Length: 87
Image: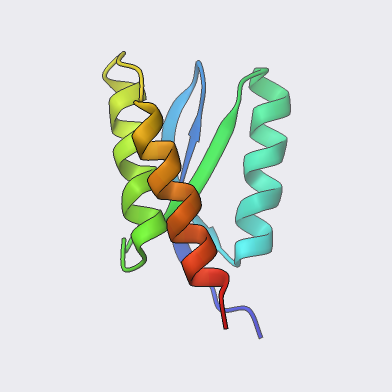
């Protein structure tokens, strides 16, 4: 069963907002809002317990501040997601 949690969703050109729901519901909202606003979107858990969520939050903060995110952050994000997906 997929538990509800609080997610942060960031849409390019719109900003960041909270969404409460399952991961599927949050992904559906991210995709819908991205299409509506015509911008790239990303999501992460608000509680930041996972390394991938902390890195995603760091990337979004840089973008919200009008800065670019360095390639090393995206490399760290890929590695963290791979580690979290491993059995």
